[in-house]
Image (cartoon, rainbow, N blue to C red; front, side):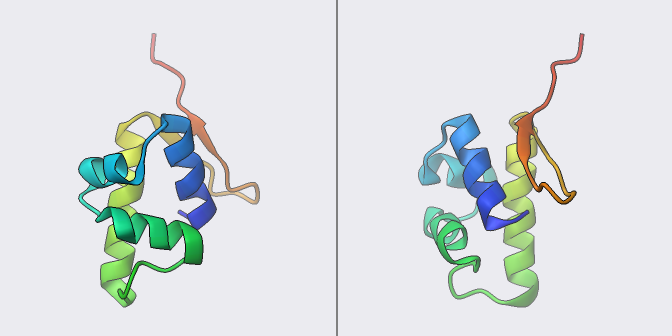
Length: 81
């Protein structure tokens, strides 16, 4: 998940950084730093990757779908009938 996708996901869900933290366990300051700079605050390597994965998983649990193709977008999943 790119920083732009993270921001798009939060906006689609109308989540604050604090709400993203509550859903993912990733500190709000780290979410904000990632979206602004592309880095998880003071984290490197595996810890950074794990937090990005946790954030993405929270967005997916909330009903979002990520496009990992050239467009790299985010959209709401269609409800199952």
